[in-house]
Amino acid sequence: MNRNELTFTSKGLSCSARLYLPQNSSKPPVVVMAPGFAAEQDFRLAALAEKFVEKGLAVITFDYRNFGKSEGAPRNLVDPKRHVEDWLAAIAFARELKQVDGARIGLWGTSFSGGHVLVAAARDGKVKAVVSQVPFVDGLATVMNFSLIYNLTGIYHGLIDLIGSLFGKTHYVPVVADPDQFGLMNTPESKPGYLALVPEGSDWRNEAPARIALTLPAYRPVSYAAQISCPVLIICAENDSLNPAKAVKKCASKFKSATIISLPVEHFEVYFGDNFEKVSEMEAKFLAGQLFAESA
Image 1: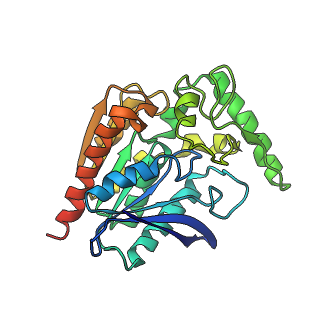
Image 2 (image 1 turned 90 degrees about the horizontal axis):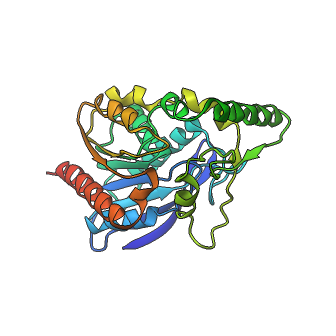
């Protein structure tokens, strides 16, 4: 496959993107992809892109503002509203690219971005297919999965960061931590599973502004599910310690056209080994089937 480094603009800032193209293909359908919580496009997205390109699809991956090589400060700012704006900008960018068929666009998101693709698809109204992998669908359900002490600690750090931001300061907390320490994700699988995604030599830092702890409970992509008209594939992890399987299945029941595949795995197990091979093949077949059907 061919890979090209590109940029597009979101709310006046430059976002880093990559275009993957199958060889000897003229204006293929395109899948837009972005990483999960506080992550970068270098975190295993290329491996997925390769699977999709093998099916004849083009792929665009991108980093949100404030992440990777994209512009913006403070760095690693997790903000659902901003992320969805970046998704919509990336979709608009894909529609204008001469190398792909901008009328046949699919979305792929995982974990936190698995929720963003639902919101973006509902707001855009024109995408042809969505894959939402081990998705964050309901902030309240996710928060209720953690202890009261944990949530109060998050609010404490969030308030420090919010107040500090009024004076140009940022209060950072770990993105992932061991269970006996505070981090935005600190379940037993979180730290080893997440850090395994980070490529060797990356300058990514395990920290993010703490203010996300204040807004996370109110972010509910599930509320957009009924507005999505295109087919949706949901990959649910039965033993997910971050995004409860019950909430994911409830969300899936609200789509007009949905396929849900539930696997007996933890949240991070879908990114590696046999589970990755199985899931990526299902996702690639789904996206190719939906997007190439649009040209029939």
